[in-house]
Image (tube, rainbow, N blue to C red):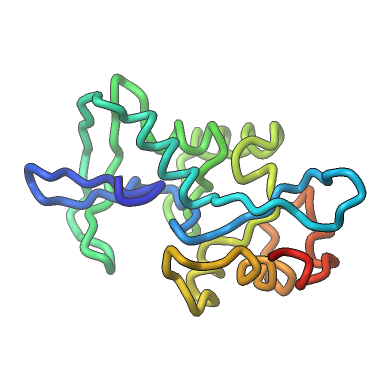
Length: 179
């Protein structure tokens, strides 16, 4: 696994990105929406690392087969629909809430169904305040793994796109409350 949406096949030295979905980048943080007592501090959640860990666990030592597109993306990864033991990995990521339907991709209706399911159940990232992945990539100055949660807290406070609609009050949080 490279991240929560990209697989690495060492025998062919090939990166394959799961088509139709997007997930948090490895250094990206989200924040638990549940309050802990009287504290105004929201608990940081490493959404990128959790997405990668879940995908890695889902694949395990199973054989993965991918139906690949013809052209690599800007990072050199081919996009494809990948299956392990009969399970579409993109659907599984959407079902547990560690991915969302990718912006601008042709949308599969069953992908939207599983995303809505995870959103309504508040699974994975849908239980957090999280910045839209495209917006995070455009705004994150430091995208190293040493990135501190406070950087993402500040970005969330000024976000343009609400991808976690049940938690629109995140914008009103004090930006200096997370360390």
